[in-house]
Length: 194
Image 1: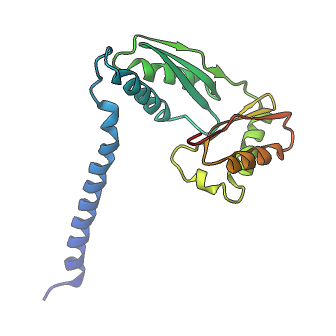
Image 2: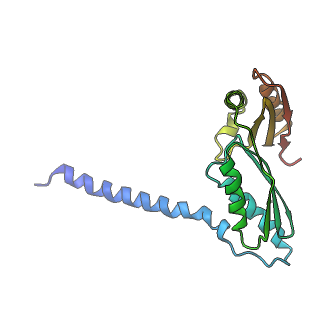
Image 3: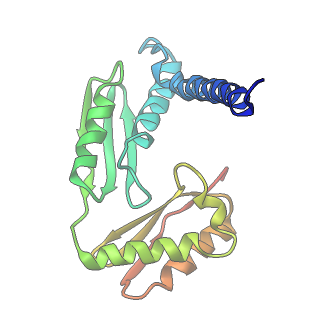
């Protein structure tokens, strides 16, 4: 006579192993674009390839958050990094990640490290709740990299990133202006496909 516990435990165990193996295989798929062979620097595709690689490396940085803004310019084989970050280590990590890209000869790191200020930290959290908690704006919070970046520098707020339409840009600006203790709000959000 068979025990019912042993009959069900074995298939469940195999099913879990199969599921874990499938997730492991799927987890390696997104890495393929980052490891592509670089086109020749004289090729027309090189600048587009390099821009894609720089963007990929920057958004994959482990401490890159909605409170940081990383941008870049490419001139030939030189990459200039600009923007603002909360943590000094992120500035260094960004330069190191871009230097490792095949074909990059030099990196000019002009990223600004924001001052450490408890009031700015409170404003960051309040701005996040105000913008991403606004009805209809929750669509942006579910993305792996939130598209609206909130930069706070000594009480001055700047919104950077991309939104779907002009209405969402206006809503983000209005929500940001409602947060107390903010001296000014600059809305640099861009609208997709404009």
